Length: 313
Image (cartoon, rainbow, N blue to C red; front, side, top):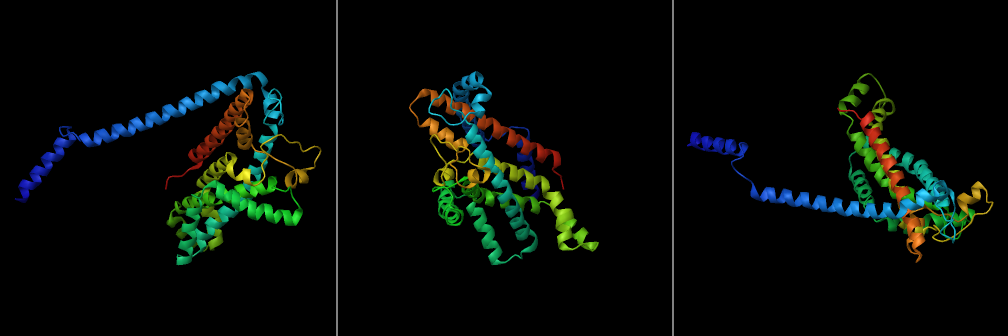
């Protein structure tokens, strides 16, 4: 009886390998998935084409003037210079705050903390925080960073570049912790054991062996987190980003950071799309093209770093 069943199973497998049995339901499901993918790509390409078609004339006509000019009530002289500067400054603040705190927290959770209920609770909540809507972080920044900084240094009434950068840092901090933790877990345990075996301390193992081995994943995750911070809009609207026309005059660097009005590229795009003049719509499309180009460069750099330095264990 067993030989008969084995023979039937072998025949069924052979027939399946030769393609005699067709999985109709599986083929239909695969076709449906392919159709959904192609439809999504078609919609994305249509949107990209419309944006590029609308914004490219602005970039070709005005060139560098569009990238350096500040906000203006006239579409012929308005540009994204101030918004770009604001975005880059806030991304710099995010890099200075979220990167060291995120990497440090991940190293502690993965290399020092014991596997207890408290540690598991913290790790679970960090992952939950990564999925919290960005507008919630805007409320957090408005209550904590804007409120606290107003009491300490008397910043701009509704926020400043510093409060905006700190809010974005809180937004991407869970992502940095998660990506760093995954990179640390990918390092083989045998590497740590070998270092301990020759008398290295825990800090020496982490500093000289674990962190260098996990660096490609850590850097890639951090760069992608900075790209997300660069494209966020909702939190900045709550912590004082200006959506209209403003001027900082001859304010110094400290005043620009703490007290002067500021904007960001996504906020400037939102402001232009809300204006009825079609010329501002073209400006918004051109700004979207610039932002997409920056994000593509950043994501490409992250992919290059991963492929260049990633190790196969």
